Length: 260
Image (cartoon, rainbow, N blue to C red; front, side, top):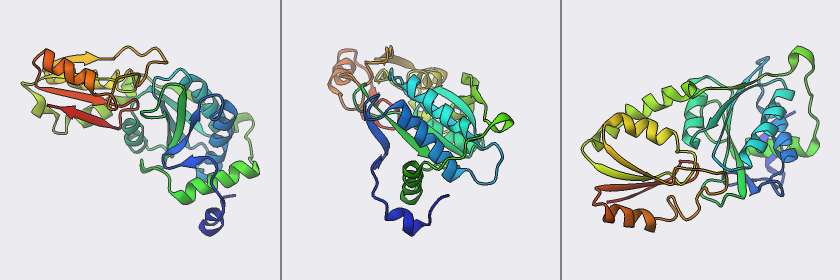
């Protein structure tokens, strides 16, 4: 059972940092830890629903599939229905949690860190990062391991969603100020990461000239001398081709740098 805020905060946190749980995939952040984190989060956040839903997204790291399977299994074992979004940026997961009325969301990514690292970040039903108190409760549950696994019809289902599932997110972005880009010639560094499908799906609808860089993820090249933390190649490309603007994303698409 979740502890009171005071009891939870007395617990020394060993797993959650400032932005979820991160570490070297399969060494520090193992499938076993991902499974146990999911079961603990499911226990703490379940509420009264018989089959609450969780959305899971990931970036393009090779370890993402492994951790996605572990997370999904953990939630399903606790009676949660799991919807897999596939490769999407972190903000899409947060936004779609509310749009699809899910009980929580999870993003598998280590942001701008190198490919061997990975991480897990949870969102509440409002699309916000979990509070420190909630993360502390999850750690207490993880330590005690007093999970109540479901059997029979109580076990949750796992669904792989199509790209149509994040179409509402694309429409949301298009309703922002993006049309102001019309008439510009731009370069976009996708960092071989989570924006590899979403960014072209949005920008190509604006009818502008876009040069896409680093859009061929192979599982190990995310953030590798590219993206928002390595701007020099983008800067050189913009200058060489006489473009108006350069845009660089990080691996999970929640950070952007622009070069004019």
